[in-house]
Image 1 (cartoon, rainbow, N blue to C red):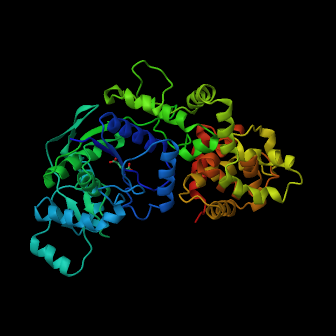
Image 2 (cartoon, rainbow, N blue to C red; image 1 turned 180 degrees about the vertical axis):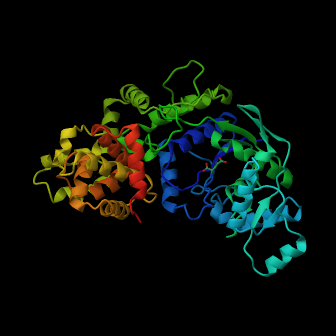
Image 3 (cartoon, protein in one colour; image 1 turned 90 degrees about the vertical axis):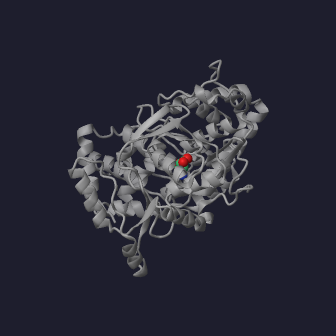
Length: 494
Ligand code: GLU
């Protein structure tokens, strides 16, 4: 048997360090066994998937030095590697399960489903969708003929315990009562993650599934699907979730999670990958610094420890410093720095702003320095330019942060629309609203369009700077936060 592993990102946002982390372990596992590592794009959620996000994910994983043997860009014997291109196939598999009596048509309206959930809740049961929703065959036929919308759901036992074998966790037991009759095929004919994932893992001959622990609860559904189809299930392994230094689940609200951010900050990809390799795993000799090849050569999945590994940017910085000093000759340091600093693509976007304001080249560095920095050196006095009172000032920064945290499509136009809506809802003039934002992002109100700057700096860097500015301004106490959250929720934002 050839070991085949995969990473299966959904292209719905920035390339996440968690994706790179799981990809790294899948790659090491496959390489160690002389097998193959596959990249598959899971874009069945058509409303949220974008081509741009897919491109960014592939680019970021490559930047880190991760290479896949098969994937949407490199092809392979099991193509296509993008679920939207296989979508015709999934329906047939869902129907196979209906024919075998393992799945059924469900015509319930959202209101009816809600009533079922409420009823179950009232009985102290898990409010999932379970049990007897199947209609008699003639009724199904009548409704299908009438063109009623439907979904296909899988049947799930009401009682008993499902046992899942996990490479790291041994046998995990989950009560079937907790598992709902999962939708397999949506009313638009698209498969859900569960169906597409199982079908593709089977068709692509995946032997081992290493994925984040947030998928443990999906495992019973998957196990059942493999049984229903009569297929061999891959071996499962649920990796521990990365955590913020305060031990909460790593989230962009607290920590930059986008690989783009680390690239933009000027980290070395080797160091980032090395650091991800230290997340819950260690070399037999416990050394902190190692290359991907060294990791592969020494890889043993059983060395993964389950205590939530903490992704701490300060530690990563330290490790990066070691890499810079030990691994780059002065020549290489120069080359890397030049490539980072004079990245033509990034510069091309900056030049139009700089050209109109500079008279001599030495004007450029001071005015553009904030575009090449991490967090700015701010003091509360830097915000004295603002006419707003202290409470409003902090609200402007906080509300902008919250609004931009929710922004899925990062572009100048969308940032502008967000800010305009906030200023309007807070009844502030755009200029007054923008001054503290200028200071937070550029360090001074005298810069070029801060919307452009935010668009170029990207979501993680923008959010980090807003968060930092809020801290510099003293932030909000726990009690205040409650009030401010309520105020935000009641703003008339469209
Ligand atoms: N598409 C899923 C994700 O975004 C894949 C989960 C899995 O590996 O099964 O993480």
